[in-house]
View: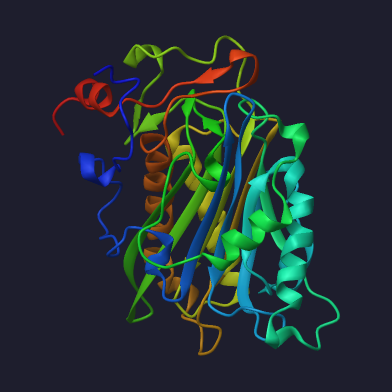
Length: 344
């Protein structure tokens, strides 16, 4: 079978491509953090439409029981709805949604409606929806704004723990990164911080420019015999959502969010003018004393390794996709990649 047409779905760890020394959680996903669930709705009508929405739902979060959180913009070319209140108060009041740029505003309205129907929000008069986005206009009719209220509600209502679908699903359906078709990716790490065990998990929506690096080695489409994006530099964005059960405060979670954006450089991110590179980090244990800052190094290491692996997963799980006007981004072929890298 032609490797460029072969089904994807393998993960970096399955191929022996493991970033760092720390162990992963049982699912190697953001859902390894207790209480965190993920739901996707995928909208696909080739060749015009490849889009969707992804919901990251931490327990029963609501304005009366917010979670500590931080946000960091490496390059702020984007529409991260709710980011200013998140930065100001360090509190996450809703699930986090990821979707297409021009669908973000409808998604935010749908999230508000869904929240107001929760019994815990019966007396709520204001809340701060958090919605991130990437521009999937290369491979989808972005002007159609296809993500509707029913799609958002379905992603929220079906969010579940356990393994997380990756690649061309949900918010990752129409994105491309580093010269290849990409999508949603996730990973986790188990760490010791402040004398206790903890988990940090991440989910990425990868849609950014640059030259791919796999465990430090530069890999171009030409190296793998894959048609590349041409001479024009790719712009785009990357949304990273990180979660942990370490009892961090909002300031410390902002430090974690910074490392999540820094980690994109390991994968070859260019942080170009038109790239919105954002990370949101939240904690699922709002009580208890936070560890001293000096104890955070293992957590910083874990989130950087997890982001690196999650980006690789987003590429390896994706499938070749053709959008409007014949624009195509090819999947990263795992077999050719392993042969190029050689023994490890």
